[in-house]
Length: 268
Ligand code: ATR
Image (cartoon, rainbow, N blue to C red; front, side):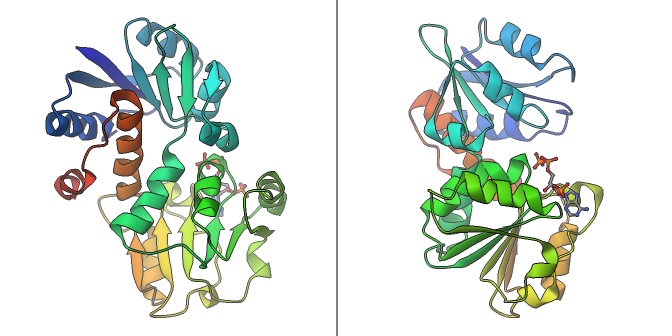
């Protein structure tokens, strides 16, 4: 049986083993998938010992940048993202690093929720690893403008420079923005602490603007509760993105893309 795993710290509450076991059952692929806790100071050791036998891993917080350093080869998506969430051990033993987060986000927004990104004004809140990982697939979907807004403006400006050849990207500080947008994506880690990034309510046009929190929880996130109060027309959380990035990883490893709808429904 081919072995796969997700490696992170913490990892106990990861839904990835459940998601991949549902994918395996649905597609008839023979594989096992486990959750591995890596010590904060030895991700590389955990990765290497698993991949002696294991065929691939998913990597989660806080190891995605380290994973990027450790692999031998990057897909174009991983190259631009500067982070790796999916590793495949190739037949010659070398490690291929991919990043499926952005593809998963775009698929969830466009396919599952039915929101076309083409020609839309999109605000990406946050300029850390999570934001960087989704910029290229967002730009590829053809928005009119993708504005990266961050508390530390320099980090947003850095990302805008890095991706300037990929599409219409700009950077801003929170107090620079006034015009409402079509979609706001929260890629900050603020939700983890139950905090809200300082977004002006003016950016939400009631009954029009969509909001997406890349985080998810059993209840609505602070950001989504705030967005709903401001009249956002739809407030989506990151569970769909989680399932879709997993499906992209499954496709890379097994050559078959599972149907995500029943898996997402079961998780909900
Ligand atoms: P991740 O890998 O989750 O992106 P990160 O690289 O540490 O984590 O980035 C965290 C992001 O959340 C940053 O954009 C951070 O803003 P700064 O760059 O100004 O630090 C943002 N963030 C975290 N807490 C926040 C808060 N309370 N308000 C606004 N932004 C916050």
